[in-house]
Structures are given as C-alpha cells and as structure tokens.
Image (cartoon, rainbow, N blue to C red):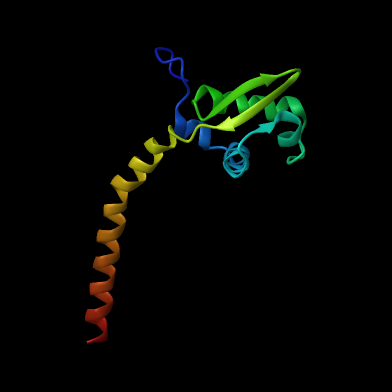
Length: 109
C-alpha cells in the first residue's frame, strides 16, 4: 500500500488466488454473509476476513451490517483499471500473433 494513497492497488488485491476466488463468489451472488464465504475455503474466518479487508481497501468489496451479520458484495468498478491495462497490452499480443501467422505462411510456401 502506498503511504500517500490510503487505498490498496487493485492489482495487488487481485494478485492472490484466494481473493480472486472471493471476487468470483461475490460476482455470482448479489450479497453473501461472512460465514457463507468462509464455508467455501479451508481456512478460518479470520483469514477470510483479512482477504476481504484487502479487497475492501481496493474498493472491490463493499460490506454492510445486518444485525450481527456482515454481508459482502462486489464492487466491480475498480476492475476497469485491470481491463484497461490488459486492453492496452493486447495490441502487442495481436501484433505478435500476426507476425507468427505470416512466418508460418511463408514457411508453408
């Protein structure tokens, strides 16, 4: 986390496979309580909570209290930063694939 920016970087947040799985679970459901999320992992409630905190710091997860229960939902808007990054670099992949195609076609001739 950057000292001057209190929010966590979205790339840092999605770097961990557990957090990516949490994002997927929340994307598939409108909202899930902590105990339902914890049931999906072979780790304790505290560990899942720590992952959720990182996702909250990156603004990827929102939470709300319902009685004694905390419910979580996905806020996918910050993922647009990842999409933009991938889209920018996809032109390099396309160019390289085109070069490969041309090389293969030249070899066949």
